[in-house]
Length: 159
Image 1 (cartoon, one colour):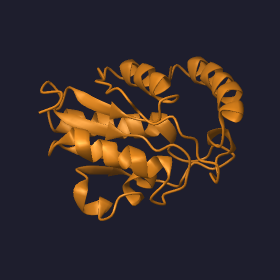
Image 2 (cartoon, helix red, strand yellow):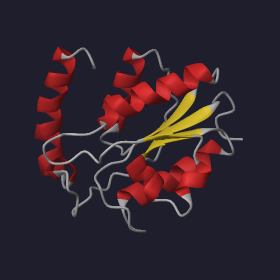
Image 3 (cartoon, one colour):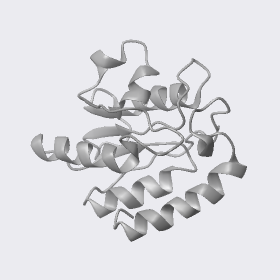
Image 4 (cartoon, helix red, strand yellow):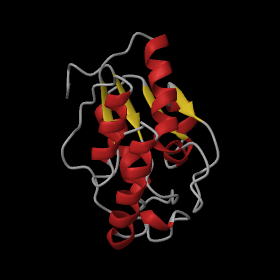
């Protein structure tokens, strides 16, 4: 068993595409691989990237897909729901799955909620060129927008 100390897996989508070559399909596949039968928690976009994803998840974070105006559940909302599920089910140590450039912020936000993340190596670095979220289409868009967004998250005490 990989990561024997882990008791769950939390997955975060990146962009909005869910076809078989998408970064979300890659993330969903990694989540299945690392979870090894442990409870899986993911947002709706990541779940939709998996065949039969609804039946595989212990908890699905519902809500509208975050769009270009940043409406919807987002990373913070996913983490809040994941944390609630973990508390209700006495889970402590999740494997955290997210796109490689996103994982650092995900882990820092999770820590704000008291979640101690286990992060596997080799997370995908792909961007979603067809995403409805402009900031997930390329590194040139991701880095400046993520930097500005991080400042806002810090102000909100979500980072």
